[in-house]
Image (cartoon, rainbow, N blue to C red; front, top):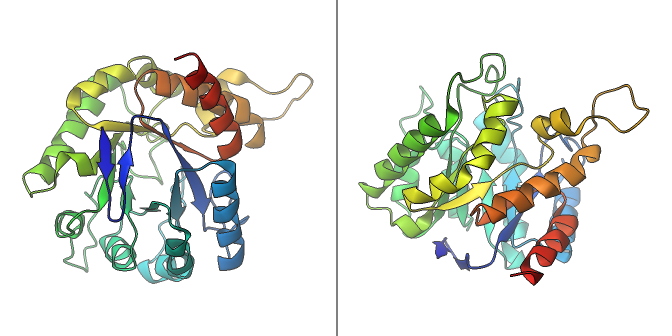
Length: 287
């Protein structure tokens, strides 16, 4: 199986590691660490040295409770980094749900649109539609994610009931929406949306039954890195009375990435690239 993107036909016979580059002051894990162009590019280069196959650039936080950023502000953060990152010679994903941002990023040479809204978000003041942007491009890749609700409220009122049928039917529908617009299936990847409007139990139910989503016929991306559900099950360090910190979630994140790959995920989106790559090498050694 391959993932067709703007500049690259990505071989998915080996698990691909997507390194996270947050160009934001307020992301849940590393907000502010790479918020300016120079530090963001340095982080891109470090992730590649650590073994990342794909870089995922995001200029708006979509953590629970996040407030929407205006298009102009998102572009001002993203485009200076993207202009330089396209010279790195690796697949670049842009983590955005706004059609104008998608279009600008693709015009600069981005390879993948990674959309938490699965192309459903629409600016009431702008007629441009995400489906039009992706379908109008000759080859870009797209990742369609399931999200219940929207970032500001998704964890206030999470899903109820059996999560797998709802996620599966949603992902099948949004993928088909693109297929009827002429987008080839090899351009489409699906993401069950761990942590986006789901309870801890529902997140782990999706992991346990992730293999069933492969029946939809598309490659899967898993995004477990440093999610709060991992802290909920792993608990704090011995002797600690506070909540589990972001960097204390590294080991649980790696465990979840390995389990996701064993259950068929073709791409894992992670903060801790070097450690995840090493763990996947161990997994590969037994196959």
